Amino acid sequence: MGWWQIDADALAGSRFLVSPLAETIAALQALDLPAPAHPGESAWLADRLPAYRKRLAAEPLDALLVRAALGTAWNADFVTPTPLGEGEPSFEEELARIRETPPSAAVADLAVSLGGPVPEPLASATDLPYRMAELLAWVWRETVLPTWPRRRRVLEADVVARTARLTAGGWATALDELSPGRTRWLGEGRLQVNTRDFPPRSVAGGRLFFVPVTPSRGWVSWEGAERFAIVYPCAGALADAEGPAVPEALGALLGSARAGVLVRLESPKSTSQLVALTGQGLGSVGRHLKVLLDARLVRRRRAGRSVLYDWTEAGATLVRAQGEGAQRVPAQGTRAWSGPRSGALGAGAVTSGD
Image (cartoon, rainbow, N blue to C red; front, side, top):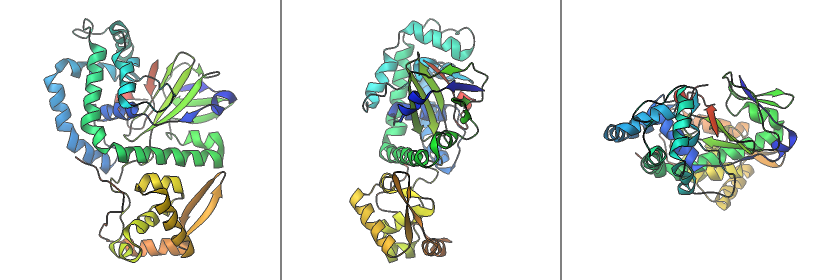
């Protein structure tokens, strides 16, 4: 197994962050070797895969490049740069790091991801970083950007949820749950990052980033001894593109927006999570929660610094009584689907296996 040695300073300085580029790379992996993990991903692939395959058929060298860059056990370093962790860069700013890679460095990275010599015509190509950047720009524009607002809300909700788990259960609990079966806190400062037989690395003195993505893909990356990243799949992200079904009668009783908040509280969530998942404003979510609390349909409890809400017995009974065979009523604010070393981490990531 591959593991990292992490000291207290690295953990104290670690942070979760959202990366449009990481989301796009994960989307490219999902498109190139499709293995949908849930119905939402299946629907997305059915909608986007024909155009992706047409794009590669028109550019055979791009198809060769993708297959070489997304190795069976290792991604080419230049394709999955470790986030800088400074501010909130745009997709274009992140993409520039790939575009500016020296062509010779890209070929060297491909030799590592392939585990051997780089075949022609890739070996003699002088525009591989440009080609990869252009392909990723296409994936972003055609397959990610149309649903980016919802994706971002889901990613932010995942960060809030994991931060709450960190506060309640400590780092061992939070890290064990990043990608079950692949990441695991081993004790004595050791974090398993995948199940491959890679040499351990020390993160002491470096910066550690945790980056969620919505496709069921993931990887690890690092640059020198300064920056390390674990890109992991959101738990259950986008499995249901419209969110939980709001029973028609419940929507009529409470209003669709308030019912949309209630049906999401089968598992505890914070106000910030509900804002991210529903797309409603903070004030609106707060007012809905107050009404639900006063009606004793939800309860409030503290987990560390977070305040979490979930169903009372009465709330669970009300939702479940209305749920069987209910017609879906779209909840307000939700949107359905439309239309360096880098090793593997994520569940189902055939292109980046672990």
